[in-house]
Amino acid sequence: MTIILGLESSCDETAAALVTADGRILAHRLATQEEAHRPYGGVVPEIAARAHVEALSPLVEAVLADADMTLDQVDVIAATAGPGLIGGVMVGLVTGKALAHAAGKPLVAVNHLEGHALSPRLADPSLQFPYLLLLVSGGHCQLLLVRGPGDYARLATTIDDASGEAFDKTAKLLGLGYPGGPAVEKAAAGGDPSAVPLPRPLVGTAEPHFSFAGLKSAVMRAAQSGRYSTEDIAASFQQAVIDCLVDRTGRQLASHGHVTALVVAGGVAANQSIRAALESLASQHGLPFVAPPLWLCTDNAAMIAWAGAERYAAGLVDDLTVPARPRWPL
Ligand code: KG4
Ligand code: ZN
Image 1 (tube, rainbow, N blue to C red):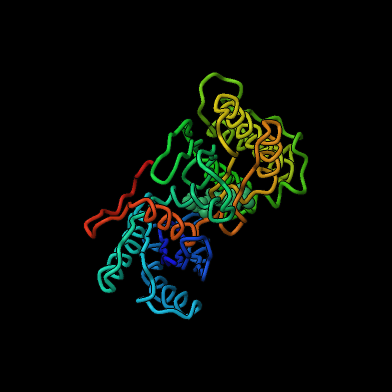
Image 2: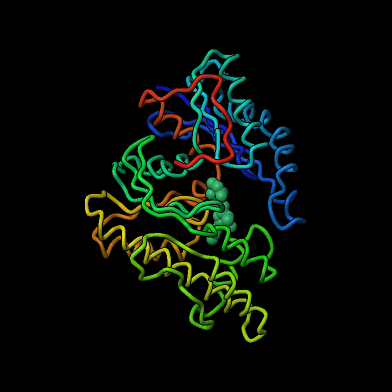
């Protein structure tokens, strides 16, 4: 059975994982840089790159030890080659190239977004192409028709902020700290989602895209007014995001009747209220709802190893000249 070593270093998590081509996770490890970035309220690229350099090699050794294996027993090296903070991406990709070269193994350069997009198939091997994917992360908010590895149609994207970015900025505005998504979700649990009137940008319009910038400004005004509790603002904000996601996703489900499932991936997919709303949307359309387990939603290397497995099985390998890319649309 083919064994893939995956490396991830595109943002603020350094990670390594060993996955088999039939979807068994042999080992996975992650070193988060949250504490290093917390004083700055966001990810500082230079700090991130240096931390990736320090963390990656020990993580690779650790996953090999966890699985009781040597590098020789690995068949394929998969590394994130973008998009992301370029210093970090280079650390992971160069490490991947060095390991591939030293061990004489094929290299698969993985688009981080493809890692998220295919991760639901690692969690649920019965999931078949094509599926409708809502990809919601710190840098992206997209609806993709996933037809196979390397075969995507982008149906909608955000015209301003990503959904995770909206959560992070709202958390900062409300003084809830970093990382913002989990903090807003926690505060929202104690609030009333209908307490604060907030806009639902683009909802009900004929165009397919997302927009969150107006929502963020409205949150700022609500916070400055002093009329609402932090919990009520957080809950109302989260509800507005849910309404936008459900409306835009429902529009695509209505016009793509042939998909096998509604799938959600990316860090924001860790949000329980968002998952519940999408699950009910899927069932209204008579479709299964598939979401990776929480730890597979946020950045990790198992999804990169798995995307490497899918690409390798499809005959997609890269040579050692493949570049690191800060921007790389799917
Ligand atoms: O996919 P990811 O781990 O990194 C990127 O590739 O961007 O996503 C991180 C994003 C952050 O914006 C974070 O605030 C958001 O996902 N996030 C959440 C939750 N957990 C993480 N947003 C809402 N609710 C959550 N529970
Ligand atoms: Zn991500």
